[in-house]
Length: 69
Image 1 (cartoon, helix red, strand yellow):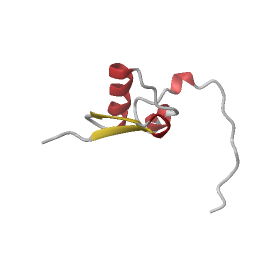
Image 2 (tube, rainbow, N blue to C red):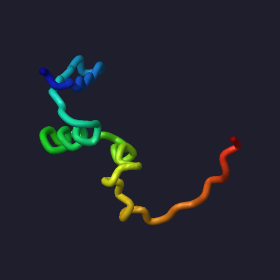
Image 3 (cartoon, rainbow, N blue to C red):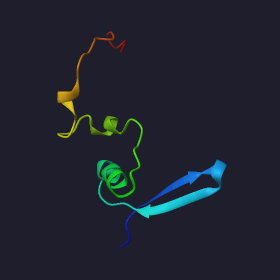
């Protein structure tokens, strides 16, 4: 059974690359950073709602209002 593949495309440079990834999206992000030095913008958003959420890095917060529903 093959693993899912991630494809990176840079149209301006006419370049693409593929690599196999394993696990969930968090694992994929970790793999890309460890193997290739690729950092995914806003990757920490995928951690919220999991045990890996960086709660210790929150410096401030505010209530933006109530839901209208």
